[in-house]
Image 1 (tube, rainbow, N blue to C red):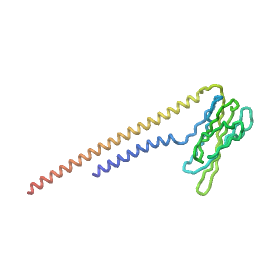
Image 2: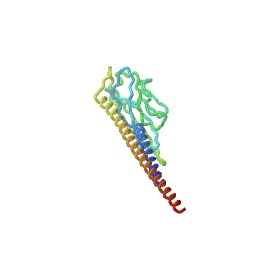
Image 3: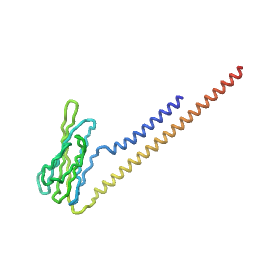
Image 4: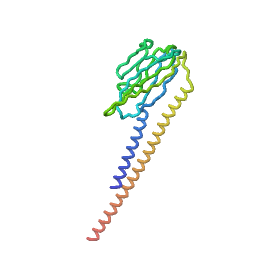
Length: 228
């Protein structure tokens, strides 16, 4: 009986390991990743200005607001064009009125994705866009403000082209996805073999214990008959 309990315990641990592996892959896929924005937009179409700033310490509560600035080609200074505080947005520059739409984090004040959609792109939209995170990390007895900024150098073209960087990025993304799936498959096969081996060992132990009990019972019966 002791061997059977140990085998059952091993099987439970292996099952938990498999579940953990599956959840680990899911968690990795859903984790925050700072991906660079595309930099080429097509005139007359919509374009996503990507900006992601991951909070390094996930266990710390935080709030953040986001400001987008723009410096057109030939201009020396940035101008404030858009802001978002987790609940409401505001378009400051009239050139972007009704053309900028929030595409980042939803239903949270802890913003990490500050991407926006730029609709009806024109050639005048070419330039440098700066995304600024004003984040406050909230600790038990104090608050710590931080500022993070990223830039997107946007070029507006008449017709879409695919650069080498875009192709390499897409290939690497698919390679990563396939690699994760293969890793998960190998882990599941490993766990299945371990569980099967543990099950066979438990069956052998159970059969051996049953034969031992049967033999002992037979010897006891023989002893009783001799005593009579």
